[in-house]
Length: 543
Image (tube, rainbow, N blue to C red):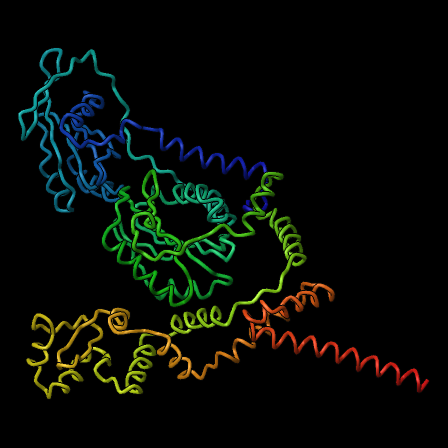
């Protein structure tokens, strides 16, 4: 049975079942998820789960000391390897043991210790008449349980939610039919359902278009219990092969259940943000998926340059339609959204106005665009050319080239080292500058170097000249384009009226270049009308 052939009722039922599974998993064994972070809590837990018919009880926890595994044995001889395998698959990092006093568990302890799984506590018990007496192996802990008070419990292990292929298809389809802002909660619920109980790290991407709608959702790489191998090249390749891509959400799961980001998680996030920014693709967030919740690194990494999303016009329309229609899946109402959007666009056209940037506003935006488009090599080259042009050689900045700088100091590398603050040459600094005394100043990046010197309008004008950019020509082209695009949204009368608005004294002062072009267009139209009338008169005379 393919997902696309399901009836609406069947799909709604399956999705409800998937959500119920998540909710059941959250509510199930709530007591077992309490942290065993003190000895008293462990003892309380041990009392509640003590089973006198079993000689050994093993309790496994995650990194947060939440018990996620409990299994009971009469004997563990020859089972140590299987227990280790289960621990590794379940993501267990610590464990407790409750054993009868004559049972030897040292081999198990040695096997688990070799795999860096830590024994946190060990209680031994023996029967004394109607009581079971307990004592700590390493600490002076003693307590007893009356056999009449024991409620034999059923052993449990971490019950995994196993997704069928159909349910997994539905989860993926739910994500791909969503808007990231409108359906953020549902997207996270589906991610949790899909990844919460995997026993290895999986790195994935959610691809968004300009409307914040999910284009597709895809796993990129799989790793081990605590590490996933992320190849930047594969991510970029996948992104470049995705049509209409604007932003992405990256995510990976922690099989241990911990939501604490590692240093590698943070470093990778910074690296990917920088890489995708050069491709004009924004990273919206990096989600870490645990056992019961999801952490947003956007909220944790305040300094990171994540892309800020605003609700799109399409999402606003979608929200309006959702109030009127309840249709599943959401893709079914895309046509309605497009129709409403077209109506709204037509309304905008009716209300269209002819508006221009002033010359100064246009120049300011262009300057920013020019500087943003330059890479470091171009900025450095243009800056140094500008310094040379103004005979300001002391302000020039150099790439941190060891051989080049040694030559400047006539091969004396010690002199070079002494010239830098602290007398040490720092190969991590990317750029350096020689001051008027011949001393070196090091910079970690070009931005800092240019800030310490200057970037002003003269330098930007120089950059424009270097790139053969003539702002007056571009501004005139911008005016023509604006007039032409606005004309298409207006009637002839509205268009002529809009042009005449820019012939007042106030507008002539504010937009002199606009007035020149507008006056030329109006004069041309009058001239054309005269020519047409003259042509008509000639035709009439000839007839």
